[in-house]
Length: 253
Image: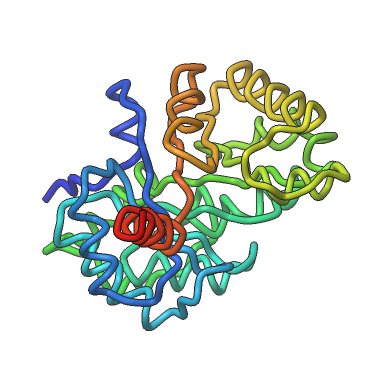
């Protein structure tokens, strides 16, 4: 059986993604968000209010819509990475990857031997014959390392040449903090813009897919036009609050 939910295949076909980001710990809201016209959906288990059990039901809800399902893990820890993969995530966004050793540890936890050290025990997989999953997983589980610190900026070439690393993901707010700027999510500061440009150039140089979190639909459109291959627009909670604010403004104006 061939799993249709492969982000690496999506990218190989030349497509770019507008990505949903889920912070609310509800399979109902996860399914509702996934039914919108997003290309991919990421469940945030680092800063979102989502634990492993909740994430699994949200993965099931998102997968029921046919959308590619990723998880941002709490930290670069093989225990967390393997658990979320076993729960059915088809890609992992890993925070705070700062050097080659951390990038190798991240990728290794996502790959079975001989390419990595992931332990066998997939609880939820889309294959009738489990051994088929092993080969599929090593080729298709998407690995996205977050670039968020000055240390990571100093080690871009080392990180981006890590075997098995598919993509990098820029978190502009943490990156701004690391550069001494305000975390407004819009990447307005010249220092932050320059850092993001340097990350993109390094990604293109090393044939790594560039991805970024954005603060608005307009910002996402701008980065897609620049060549970024996955852009996230805020998160479900902020989009809900923005929609509510617009409706209230219209009702009271």
